[in-house]
Length: 376
Image (cartoon, rainbow, N blue to C red):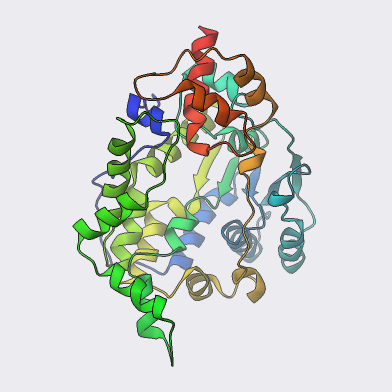
């Protein structure tokens, strides 16, 4: 099975835009909890069965659901596997991890320490680049390293949770209609923004766009319009919006890439919250208005699995500084600007950014393209 080949604009912008015309499975739909249990049961009997566990809400819910189901069915519970970043305080999650593991009564776990192994040009990524060329997503190294511990078995991840359970276009309106008492003026503005027609939402998305500083002036508006079209396409109906997230090409291609790489390693790779049946169940449960936010969604669907403080946490680990490390800087210092499309990007700005304290994540594909050109 082949991997997706990005076009020049996708490489330059570091993103894959658009949606695949995939219809949502027809109902009636069972509850998301029932669907998740059925999905997990098909994988729990294959050993080793590992659950990628960061301590965040999605991975914690997935681990709790899998452990609860395994104990009920009398089968071996899955083993949580965690990436630890001792050099990166922003990625510190140990207190949340400990709280979840203690609640579930789990002592067996795997912890992999990360320094600079997950650099886009590091020892995990470069063998794949040599074999396959550019792949989407470019930041595949962390997942690949987890899969290396699951050979012969399955790796379950909570990828897709942000999209399935997170904010939807209608959420501000849902908050307003659910509010009791006075609300801030900003809530009214957000609700009105959700009701704007597509051309106004497209215009607002274009004005407030994320700018890629390395792009030539001629290319930046084209990519910005692609981004704005994607944002303006979101349905007001919460359920349809949920399904749209699952049909985004960036998400579907990324999932397929990791499944292919997993097959090469004799690993079944599963993004539980991106599986069509689960996404459809969440979409059906949310119906038109959905929930008032991420926390309300998690409480409604999985509130019995974890302590309230875990489901309602507001913090989130940051991993950006854990990606571009020593290998990127060594390459950037000696790079002569070749290997990228100079009609679309400015090599000098790229080099400065890769050497900065805060490189932009969407430039990762360009970094790998430049590295591959040097190899050949």
